[in-house]
Length: 152
Image: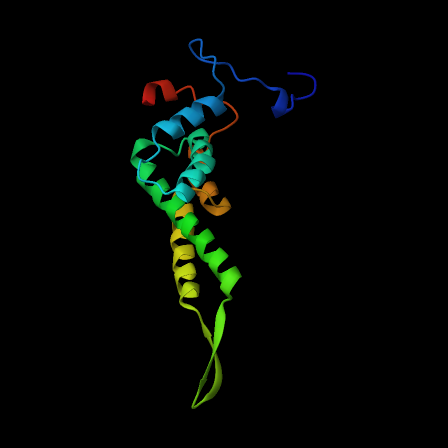
């Protein structure tokens, strides 16, 4: 085709079967429908932020809900530990027979473990640049895949 290529912001994807809702609306509905009932307030806020984006990418399937729940829980723990460490500090001083020593507070170890869990879950869900590249064809393009209606 001759001429300039259209910018992605101006391209409007065709809707199937008279669908009038936007991708954002459908993703929000899917995230709300799959939201676990036993989330804390912090986890629920994170779910409302993260789950619609995962639904847009096609990574909020019913079998992945538990993994996303654990991802959200780990992120909520990370934020809580970070706030605690910011308030109380990361170290304390001990005087002993070997002189003055700096020790880490227990929340530092808890923070590090939660960070490892969060990082592993982020990689599993394809939420890091490296893991997203590894997904290859699973990453959605600007338009929906026409085969979706046949695959469920």
